[in-house]
Length: 185
Image (cartoon, rainbow, N blue to C red; front, side):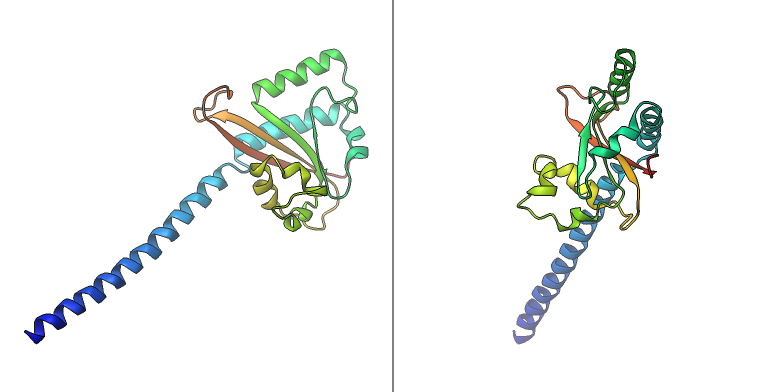
């Protein structure tokens, strides 16, 4: 009778150890899957190519004027109608068509060094106010390196359905890409 009690306690201890081990493995696996899903949304080749095309278009059509808008610790959102680009009506229409064709939600320009984002807290104010309504942007910008690097960068946010079409009323996914511009002449 005494031996049966010992086996029962031994079984309970083994089950507890196995349960704890499986719980640790599951949380690690779940965390790795979540990180991989997020990584796929950042700087994917397709979106880098689209961003490269947008940057080339902007370089040829008034990007040098954008430099005056950018402060040290800020992301500035702009679009084709922004008066600093000084686009002709024909170029504005072409730019608008790029936004539609490439499924662009927003475009930002900033200094290359976006390390100020690391200091942003949940009480977002001042330089961090742009992140108040866009947690996806905040999470993306936190992943960008280039601390202390001079120059500027373009960050583009794309919005598409899961099958790669323009986002309407269906469930949307957001992808980001950034290209460093170096110094704007």
